[in-house]
Amino acid sequence: IFEDRLAAIESDKLDWGSAEMLAYATLLAEGHAVRISGQDVERGTFSHRHAVVKTEDTEEEVLTLNALKDGQAPFSIYNSLLSEYGVLGFEYGYSLANPSGLTIWEAQFGDFFNGAQIMVDQFISAGEDKWATQSGLVMLLPHGYEGQGAEHSSGRMERFLQQCADLNMQIVNTSTPANHFHLLRRQIKSICCAAKSSATSANHLWFSRPKCCCATQTPPPALTKWPKVPSKKYSTTLQQLPKISIPLYCAAGSFITK
Image (tube, rainbow, N blue to C red):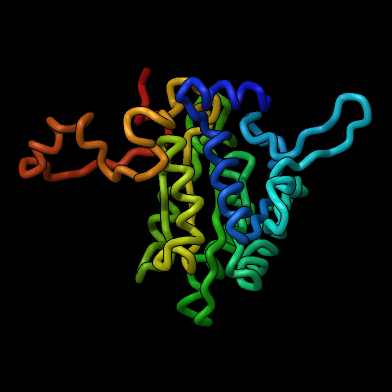
């Protein structure tokens, strides 16, 4: 696993899992604790994270993100029970108690958050307005209609969008590893984002797709900026902006067709 990641970086490619782990590593090295919980988050449901690895002979668990350097912040990750309501509620409370750290809850599939809909309705989307409490909790919602059935498809981003008002939370669709790297870092480093919960959708097929790797060295490092609109690719579209009356935002697989 680690040899593959090193080889990818040396060949000027960075996949989704590597970009995510790199974001955590930089935050930990800078003194910000990172905590993740959810179903199968240690490995990652789509075998992309591998935050915990086991030795073949003794099955000793190794967390490489806790071996970065002396004095680093702690990295904690837990495979949780199939109880989205209880776990998301706990992580919301944890994010309130530890605002300087990055707290993440990941749904095994995006639509599984519906088991915790009450937490989203009553606390995450409305807590700041009702009680003046600010949370920087991140909800990762792997999303996409990939033929796995009605219970493993849509992250219901429309529900989150319907609950947005008065800058109460961020709804994000990351489409490249560089996007994801910056999203996780800015949740701690950006003043405007650190106190806002984030519901983040991404197509789970991108986690292991070679086409979705980003360059690390050439052209200028892809991890140094987050292009809101990749203008070169969409130069024709940008020229037609005055003629566009209805913008269409899409999540998951509609963005990458080949």
